[in-house]
Length: 556
Image (tube, rainbow, N blue to C red; front, side, top):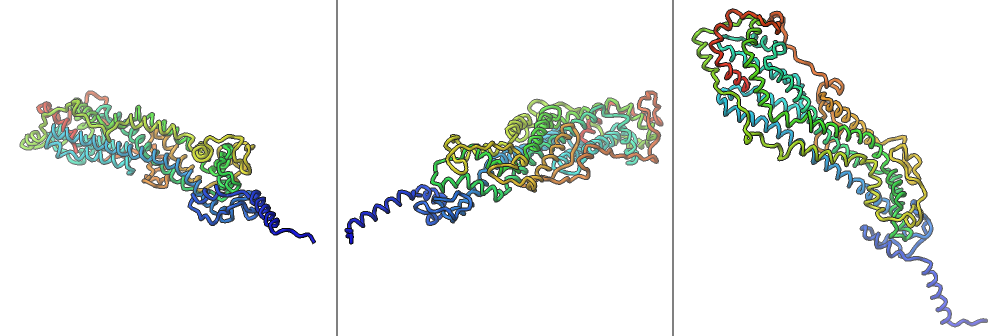
């Protein structure tokens, strides 16, 4: 029998252990990374083990236990959401801050215009203005109501303003008569025929309507963009996306390749597949951005609300001066159409003249009296800033995969020594184009193109609706209001009584009453007879007309 020394046996055993240890690679670096994620180090083997238990990563020798793969799957979902949310949050904040700035600007602009008019009229007309200032207060109240979403027809509201102004002004021009409410109502019915205020009401109505429609719709567009991004960024990744993300980001760890980054094209296909639904927004999003840019150009030019509101008191004064200059002709034609008014007793005539005696004429602003710029800025500066942000936001959704990959996984990676999903080698597949349908054959992510995400579909419809409203606003047509609040859904709801196709049509209020009105006046008839000596006594009051007309500015 062959005798073997115990010393030799020990030597052979140590050699065998050394050989086995060499074949089983150390998982030290993998364990360090695993622990750095906050996971339990007991889950991670010290040396490679058999990978038959793995469901996503390649089986064979591995540094990942079953528990590690499960944890990596959870981490992959978290990583994706963080990488997706970060650029969305950045852009959302851009739109949110610009919306707040525009909203603040528009509201303060209205406030400044009203305050400026009130201050000047109080200084100029004193008690008479204060007694009749509700007319202008109502005007600004209606403009504010429209901007914040009230059911206000701008054209009707402005028509009513001028009619009420005429009703207040006409008795002042004819203080020797008594006018009933019915008679004054008749007077206002002839405003379109007589045009007592000249062309100012028509021009101002066009300017105010276009400016306010554009301003309100533009502010809504900024809020809509903010809310669309917010809704889309909350969409969760599909199980197929999470699986692909883990395979790209953590399966190389299981192979011990802790420093190898994913190939760029590989990452683009993984993120493109994960973001196939959001990527489908790109066409509608770009159309929306283009429509916003178009309205922005209008705000810089003919629809500039700042240029409309700052001198609105000057324009109203011009209208009143027109009425003053044409008062004789207007009064004669009204007396013919509505009938001769009832003269006041002589004692009341003198009192009426005294009460309506205004010796102040409207004066223009001096430079130091011009309204202060709203919100510490100007509309031009605001629009210029937003236009830059809008242009940068184009193709946001289609560029997300590239930006996310670059910022999180593939920066500086080479195409020959990168992780391709199974090994450290070149990635051989083509990159899929943007859009849901283009990912039907995505080699790395299974994408269900037959069932688009319901949230994404809703936001596509929201963008299309707002784009149509922007185009209407660009053409100067009114659109129904979308109720959008901070953090809202972005889908909006019309608070008005008209739909998107009808809101551009204005229904003018009719006050005609055949029983109270005589036949239509021929406004071109220069040979109109005075009614019952209507103006035989008026001549003595002609000197009051300038001041009387100015009083009108103050009215109501």
